[in-house]
Length: 236
Length: 314
Image (cartoon, rainbow over all chains, first blue to last red; front, side):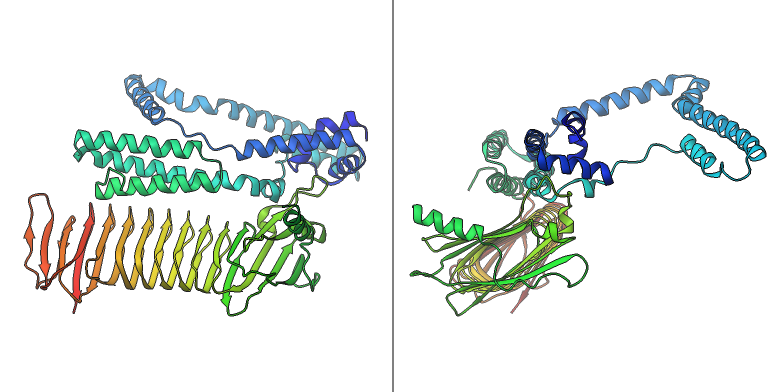
């Protein structure tokens, strides 16, 4: 197998999507080709780096915007005539209906063809016909399952970011709870709360991924709990 | 410096411990091994263990050496060879034990759930333990210098331990029993069980989870949940503070009293028992003093949207 044939397949190989002989062939080539091995190493490092990146939290305003847009669409929908609403309900299925009709047509042609073949050749065409019908109605085979594709070393590298993401979710929950409770606070308390949250969030943002960031996140969660539940808005 | 690096490097390069048991037990490939690390001149003061691939159990004993048993499991021999345990003793008395899976581009990818390294470590009782796991179980037993335990989703268990203990997890349930020292236990979405805790300070918090404590005696106690119920059976210390707070969970406290107690409580419904003379305050708090004497313990119970129940056990 030459480098020109191996290199386009490296991504699929690293994703674990090359099965059987194809995977073996690429693996065998990598054992002997320094250049391709280096390219595979670089690509794997890039993937690990991407996996380790912290998840991006959308701003709270985004959800508010989505909700506003949904509400506006519901209002517009209620004003449309009933026949247009009925048509709209079926419109999204039009491509699928077309596909099903196409598949039925293909199956009909194949059945006709099969009956002709049976008349001409009694024994051979069974498998051919079956494969043809199979291709007409079945989508392409799914890629290899993720559990097989992901390697343990990559999973371990991505684990700290995943844990930080879980802590970030808890922070968002607590922040929402604290904001809800802040209606009863004085202006000075609200100002102190915003200041403390900003400081603690800055600590989270500047901490290195892994234990340092998780430690900073836990400090923020603890502060938010104190503020939301015990009205302790100033750090002790 | 060079000598220390060489020592560390040698031990990292020799992770295959003595007595490999080979494969054959169960499906896939397995390896069991043991190693003994004897102190050279100075005692082991601290163990730092990081095992993202399985369980960790650290058990204290009266010896001076560290005994490590490793149990590795993988789908095949090739993958088993990728599983590593590194052991790095430092001159300052700290020992680092870390597990990892080598990155091998030529090997077939294997999921983390398909491999395992479990560690059983016997360590001198007076060594402090800092340990972390991912989804495996983490146990600390019979130690005298406390430790800090961290888990993503695996359960944490601390039993018969003295010294300061800090535990945190995202979703791993925590059980701390017979801990004599300050405790700080924090979890995001799991439960915290406390049994027989005695120390200067006890802080426990859960976001989505309950906290249950019994036979708790600490000078300062602070239990907090956002969603879960808090149940506590505790003793009040003179000058002590007991603060139990929840946003949406119920709060239920049974207090063994030895001196005077100043109690304040607030909740959607408050039940302070029948014998108390309760003074409702304009700010929503109900206050009462139980017993007589100087230096009363302060007990503050609060649930913003839940019930508060309090009883005294004389």
